[in-house]
Image (cartoon, rainbow, N blue to C red; front, side, top):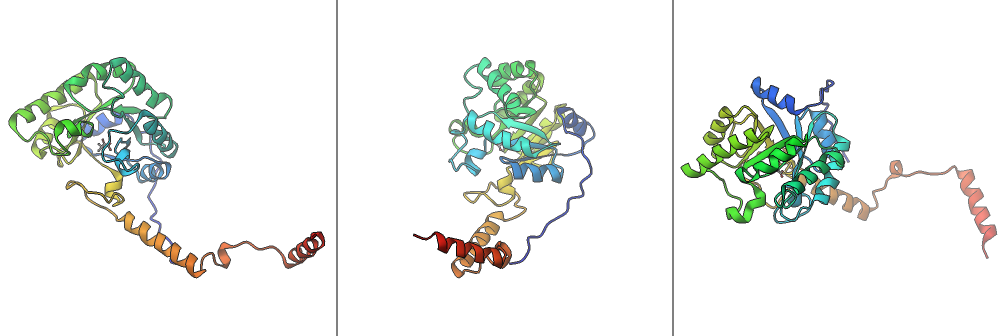
Length: 297
Ligand code: KIV
């Protein structure tokens, strides 16, 4: 069995990324890097690789828990995974995704649930989906001292309303509504907005008009930063891959090959080998056998 290759990351001590860093990066035209994580080892690897922010997305419902969409994900699911991520990351800005029905029912529920992400799960900020219909909640959460990231365009929690996972803002009226929503979210106090699956030139225009950074996913290169679902980037989610994803690895294949190797070696009795096994000195073994014989009925 060959040894597993390791890549050494040139790690220089990094300062904790904050919402202020996001704004500074936009001002300096430095792209902001964001990826999702749902567990400790992924958070550790992302943090050490130098990611700016980790989003504990409710996409965990699909890529980790195996649901068809994000709607069944609960607050308890999110907090559980956020806690694991916060144990792995030191410098990245940590953003917890508010799940379906945790912020839509009332403003007070939205504030209470947003608070749990910071108080119980070690997050630095929360994300929620929607535009003009969410302004009151965004304002109240921000007023409670909790940074909010907005999310416009393809908002997966509205998959049924949108008629499927499809690009948004592709006609003049829809584009106008999205640009208005982006301004309203900025005015309500969002520190950043995810723009998902919308025409590239629309996302560029929104990014140019706002003073807060936009983070694109399927929205072209004109956004101030980019985010992907890590399982898509790693080739770990097999059910489907959106067209805007670039796969940087095929980890699912690596896993399948490793599992098949293990199964084969156990069947062949070539694993465990001597180096995976512990032994005791012969004299001790002899004493044990003798003692054992003496104790037999
Ligand atoms: O849940 C998620 O991972 C997200 C990103 C796709 C932006 O919302």
